[in-house]
Length: 205
Ligand SMILES: Nc1ncnc2c1ncn2[C@@H]1O[C@H](COP(=O)(O)OP(=O)(O)OP(=O)(O)O)[C@@H](O)[C@H]1O
Image 1 (cartoon, rainbow, N blue to C red):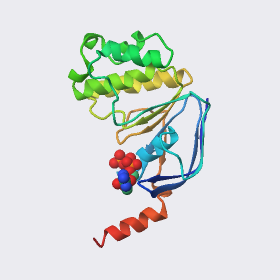
Image 2 (spheres, rainbow, N blue to C red):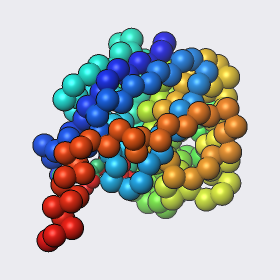
Image 3 (cartoon, rainbow, N blue to C red):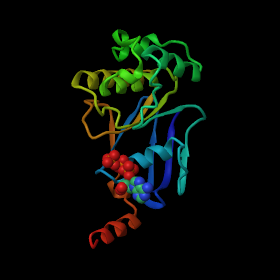
């Protein structure tokens, strides 16, 4: 259940943003992607998740092992918290939503339509969905946006438990999750030379 990325070059809006990215993620490991705004972390994660094709290189993961959680929450606003998790669990062929509800302290919000949740509550529900997928490799883009301190701790604990069970996580985040076991990869050295030219041009606009 490993994820291997080899010599990956990725594009955004037809422009090459990162090139030559290689790393691997083994069961039980977390890898945090770092780099300044706009360097291409979101694009990299979307490419790894199969939402867009790479320009060059390869992403290897066994089929149905990976799940992606990005900026858009993708929640069904008219369904309740519980119904959202049940819906998602069904899609992934799972039936236990109780541990996901507990892990993100969602029980008191069980019957509230997702559309009425606060931003942080929506995010907690979005992250809880990871737990009902049964998938081992989590690919997460800025998972802690809108979360308060306590919810960040909940999330870090969920990640720790996931790693302890042999799961893995690839995350782009600007905050310190307090995960001592996480490795980091700064993607700045992989900035594509075309992107540098692009920025050079911008300086004269
Ligand atoms: N449609 C587009 N056409 C051209 N460039 C684009 C387009 N959409 C995004 N970009 C650029 O692609 C680059 C990579 O964006 P991306 O969202 O992957 O960066 P990021 O590292 O995730 O940034 P952040 O840390 O701010 O989330 C950015 O410089 C962005 O401005």
